[in-house]
Image (cartoon, rainbow, N blue to C red; front, side):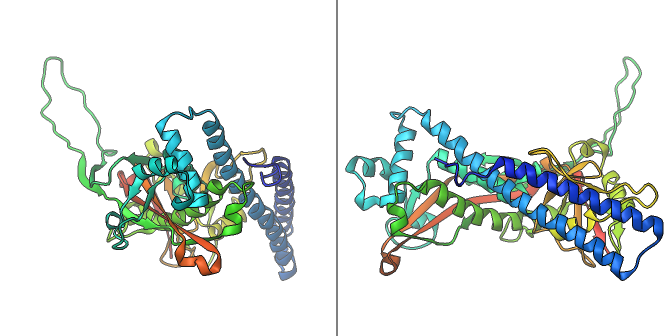
Length: 413
């Protein structure tokens, strides 16, 4: 169970948000003062940059605390669901046996638990990772669901509103790719047939099931023996975060050649170009938003990396002095760019020449496939001389953008 000691302090998070808002107001007031006085000396710019740096430092702490809060909420929710489960349910029995496997290993489990766990045994030949007789065990459903929820907290693409498809098998899954936004209907005379034919542009994508590894995590035996440690939550967070990072990279900019197709591979070109030597302008972002068809603007979000966001935070309209970025103040209230939510994705290209630094659109048209049935291996003898046990997880994923023009990017010159 999450104790009060390690659960993020919601009160502290709210206080930090108020501190950030105060720092933001101070920086914007100083910026407006500089504009009025035309005071753009090195000293004044340095003072303004220091104010922005103070706000950035608070923002970084807020973002870290919000990720911790999201993960703790996931763990707590799954623990509450677990406490309500029927202990005689076969799925629950398997989950309990799996927890014993994590802490003690198959050799030191009760015979009844070993028998239950054997139903989820996966041979290494099936994993393609070796020639031994036994590879590992399928993770239980509640553990898998917890892993996916944690991935969402640590991966920009999963937090973007992307559509998640969870399949029981890993066979190739055809999925239509289309764009019918330019086509319209027509009026026909009563009793007359229409002779017009306007077909949408269709192609077909294939969602595969690429096998991902978390790489090995080594855990000390003393920690495994500590009954006060929520071992499942701890190991689950480590494994899920590792796989979230690599899959997020591929979901963002994968080339569909032995890896998933990233959305940047096929999304639309907005035709908007920003200058790398200067800063992002209000006009750039407005043009980017409106390059997307209105039917996809309503659920549109911006996506950019943290360094690019830092540039946007300093910008405001040239005439009215309206800031592009506004901080969220209330708990769980998102900050916005031009009134639209944004997702920080560290796998987005940097704001440099020739890069697709900022994207905007409806990310529900981007499909992420998760294949249910992740596999866990527990490596005992390999690290015995270190008094450690290794844990390794395999899971399968893929992605594809189904409506290319629902998301568009801005070029940097």
